[in-house]
Length: 317
Ligand code: FAD
Image (tube, rainbow, N blue to C red):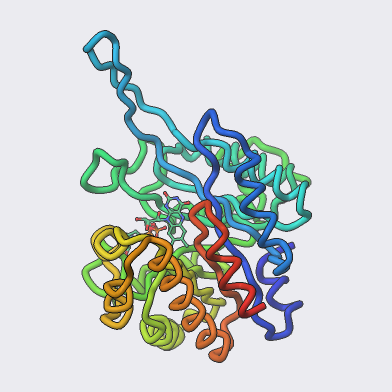
């Protein structure tokens, strides 16, 4: 079922959902199941499955290093199919511009359609680890808006090549990313919101936000988005702070602010378990306020571990 239909059926009740990362190549899917199992009791109507960019790996050949480019966490669509089948929930593959030609994207979307996947999250993707800035793949899309346009066209029965005869159109519900503290590359929040409006005008049906730790940022973002005519649901993405390193890493990588009060609480901790607990408690308070605000979904970034998400969800759902 489409995310938008799940929201309609919820009649204003806030839903619970989360995002998972496919295992690394060579690893077992069981660990993923072990982390999903404890969250199923909270009835997620959908689960997002991320897609990772390709990266360079170095193979030691007696001191000489061969450089190979590979995707360390492939299998997004396979994971989507496996989870959909096992738990009977909708799964949402993240579809990236980076690393894919338009043709490859079309193949992926055709597979999604055959698998009965009703939603896709359309994203540009980040630069590869060795790149400073995102570089579009040859034959691929430079921005998420262009990807949204391709998916939207496919929904109208327009494939890349006119010769295709269509009697079974896809009807994907399209999610896109939004940034309450603006995207790192954007000159201003206003400019970034105008870009978000372009994605919605191109056919996006809902927005999921980047993580934030200060709800005011989300409230202001929603207000500004509404003021600019963005009327689609804006789902808040919540990531519980989990390790000491997040204090440096999150502001640095995502250019998001961490509230002083949160930094202070982490500063009082003597162990990693205490830090994880502070992250859980902060996320519970955030979630409670967002629930009161009437958000359509509370969407959690699980980062492959579910103990903290379970601790949060059990206080709310
Ligand atoms: P876009 O919407 O294309 O925007 C990218 C930047 O370009 C912005 O600064 C925007 O303002 C600007 N821009 C847009 N259009 C134009 C234009 N026409 N001209 C000039 N500037 C323009 N990454 C992954 O690799 N895998 C994932 O699974 C994944 N999942 C994510 C899920 C969520 C909910 C979020 C919030 C992010 C996710 N990301 C993921 C990260 C995302 O790929 C990066 O944040 C990426 O840098 C931007 O993606 P986007 O889709 O927002 O890009």
